[in-house]
Image (cartoon, rainbow, N blue to C red):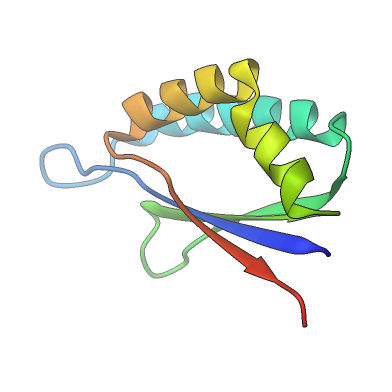
Length: 102
């Protein structure tokens, strides 16, 4: 059963606005995560979106062949390490919602 995982990340504001100096670092980490995910069994696709009206907010949508494939990826130590770096950089934890197709 195919699953789609929606991850939401919201960068903390520093002072009066978004610290844009963090964006290249965030982008690099997200590209590395996607690169590793591409090599995982069951990975179908992924996309990263940035909210036009709220540029601190990112949504990543990934599609997996099965819930088990997603769970293996989620348990991957390298993924967890990179996710920890992302969360530390943005100042808040990533939230996950997992959906199945009917």
